[in-house]
Amino acid sequence: MKIEDRIRAAWEGRISGCLLGKPVEMLSMREGPIGLNKFLEESGSLPLRDYVKYMDHPLLRGANKRCCLGMMDKAEVDDDITYLVLALMMMEQHGLELTTDDVARSWINLLPVGATFTAERDSYLKLIEKSNMAYQFGGPRDFDFDEINDGEYNDWIGAQIRIDMYGWLLPGKPKLAADLARRDAILSHRSCAVEASAYIAALCALVPVSSTREEAVEAALELIEKDSLAHEAVKIGIQFKNKDASNLHNNYGDMSPVHSLNNLAVVVWAFLSFQDSFDEAIGETICCGWDTDCTGATVGGLIGLDKGSIPNSWTDPWQGRVSTAIAGVGELKLDQLIERTCTLVEKFSTEPDLQ
Image (tube, rainbow, N blue to C red):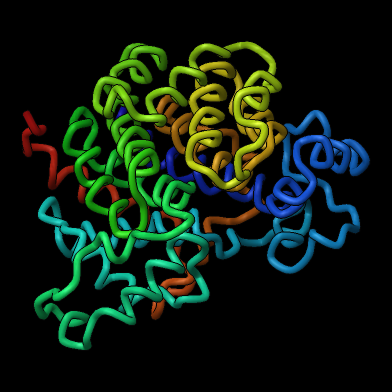
């Protein structure tokens, strides 16, 4: 299978999974999996094998409403998409020498603060407070990143949704992909959230070169700290392969719906459990609850990488139109993003993996 096909399907899968989860993200967070699935049933959306059918609900409005079945004409702005494009732009500018300082300056120069949430917003505001204008344009740093990522949300999912691109660009080089993910993640996160990010990046790098999904999942696990809670979350996802999602909630029921660990377990569980159908995989990912647009995006991208194609029924509604919150960028064409990604894959293809 050509890497170009995998990259196209990864973009399509990630965006489609995000758009499937976006309408019910807030509903899932506020009302939990029971309230989420009650809404999906009453709206006629179950079994969830297509975009969510609209039904009036106070938490379903604005851009979320425009992601419902029959109401979509583009991929609406979402941080799961914005950060993916930003990672592509950073790698185009800095390549494999990308540093945490480069990520910080990219945020200051390209991300509106209103496009950041939880740990990212907390870190962004600290960046503005502690850096001077010289730093913004490449000057020296006179603060430590420990001052920036020291916040109450630094074990949540934010970093985990920023790093797929590093794995996409480096098929067969999971150590390097994980290292880049850590450089990005430590701007806003610590401990288990950093390791969760490294795991997803490594998994993205391994999927195109592995014989089975199980092989990729296990190999990526070797590249994160064995005593980390992220390692445990992956093992829980593996343990409940092909079993009901309620098992995941029994392990993480009291955890924030936007924590890194419960959502990491969902990603691994769904990626392993639903290998025959893209529709079923992302549908059941969303029905599991928690951070639905994030898990839908990650699972969708992973399956695209693995299969090299996804059904047109998911991509036709948004017409290759990709919106971002990045300053001066706005809407992009999917084909251009795919071409830019493939250019970097080729550029980095001769680079060795880390030892």
